Length: 253
Image (cartoon, rainbow, N blue to C red; front, side):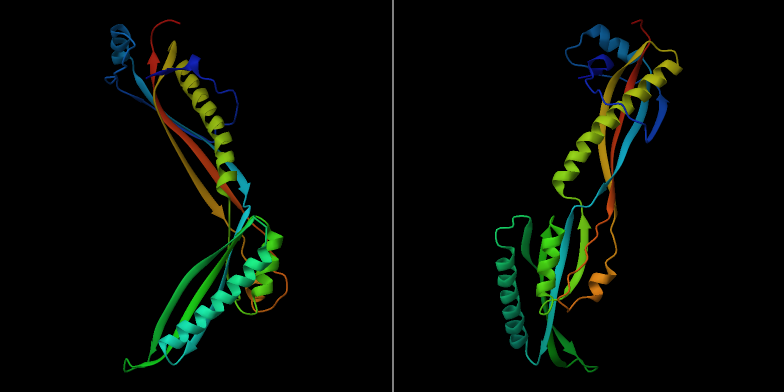
């Protein structure tokens, strides 16, 4: 169903981040239930393709800390047993420290046991690596827990991100902005070519996020000690785009 400009209920005004417009030759348009006369007019009216987008920079509110341990021994079973024992004990320690804090999630990460070979291809010994993941929006609590466990499982990696809830809220606001920018561009194009108005033919929504993560060289250097790890998140650019096409009305308002 075609939407008219007058039926739009978007009210938030914004600056247009990026937009483009290109006139296209008239094309067949089917509009069920709108009447044969309107369908025939749409077939005669020219079309224009438009794009607009809204962009915002938001702070990363979630940290994902990877704790890792490696062991080596003469046999595969010995490595697997030692690795499992460490993971179970550290996991229980982490759960005890988290307690009722629902802002911190603990989960198992990668687990891998592999052979070490000499130049002749013979197995000389076995190695294993296991991970525990801490994910939290409470940076201070996550830092305290990671530091307290680092003597047995040092920090192997830090990744910051925007939580799904915060991203969804920001994208909802950006959608209003991008929609208003699309309407503004459509009206400007209509006025520039001297048409009476426009009808929206179709709309396609899109979005993208560019991540800017803060580096964590200090945290990596402190791995193995129980000093508190400094956590400083970065930002991400979130984009919502509106692409679509319109009919340029040649009739009078």
